[in-house]
Every structure is written in structure tokens, then in C-alpha cells.
Amino acid sequence: MVKKSQAAMEFIMTYSWAIIISIIVIGVLAAWGLLNYEQLVPSRCIGAVNLPCIKKPVLMVNEDIGKSRFSFIARNPMPEKLMLDTIEASGTDSCNILDATVEIDNVKSDITGVLIEQGREFIINVYCANAIHDISKHEFTLKYHGLNEEFSKSSSFDIIAKPFAGTEAEVALP
Image (tube, rainbow, N blue to C red; front, side):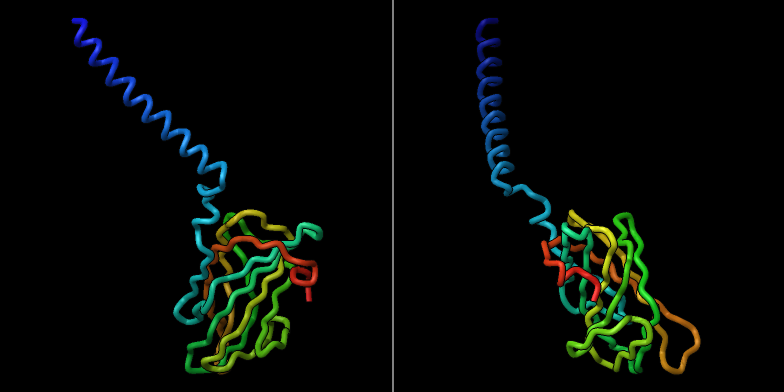
């Protein structure tokens, strides 16, 4: 009977030391910031086939003025010119859109009525009234129409972005 309890105690002591060491290692890794999920999740932009994203999105946040700016690059792969109409935000961490601009060849203009040539890349800047602090998922829907079409079409952009601290000039309205 004594030998059985001694074996059980040795078993429990061996595994309890292993568990204690594992907890200490996890605690040290967390204290050093190596277990921060924000570093593990990449920024990404997924657009539809009709207006795909080209590069990772950028989210600039200015705490002083409490605003944010999303920037992402899209391309018109359609065989025709497109006229942009509006952009809307949806999702749980939704951006309260103040304004949106389109940048083509370093020229910024309001998003409404911008003509996008076939095969042309363009930058969409969405200015939010709220400061977005954490990595979050957003969905923006861009409405547009072809030059010879009456009805609007739409393209959705699913964006996961990490916030970067920006200056007032980088985040403020143009």
C-alpha cells in the first residue's frame, strides 16, 4: 500500500513541477509582449473581383483630434471606365464616415463623380469621426456605375487593419 501511494506522489510531484514551469514561461512571454495577438494578425484587404485590393490597408489614428483614416489601394480591372458614386461602412467596429476621397496620380478629390480609367490603380481614403484603437475588421461598400449604365453596382472591401499613430495632418480631413 505504501509503495502505491509513493508512486502516486512521485507522479503528481513530477507533473506539478512541469505545469508550474509551463505557467512561469507563459507568464514571462506575455510580460515581454510576445503573446500579443495584435502582432500576430496581419493587416489585409480583400476586395471583390470587380475591384480588387492591391496592397495592405493603412489605418492612421490621431488621439488628439479623435479621428481615424483608412487608406487602401484598389484597381479597376473592368474593360470600361467607372464612375464612383459613394462609399458606406458596415460591421461591428464600424467607422462613422466623415468624408471619403480618391487619390489618382497624387491628386485628391471627393469620391463622388471620380472617373477611373480601365486598369488604373487608385487610393481610397476614408475619414472616420471616431478614433479606432484596436485591430479591427471593417467592411466598406463602394458604389459605382459604368459610363453607359444607369444602375449602380457595388463592390465590398473587407479590411482588417492595425492602427498606427498619426499626425493631425495625416488623419484630418483634406
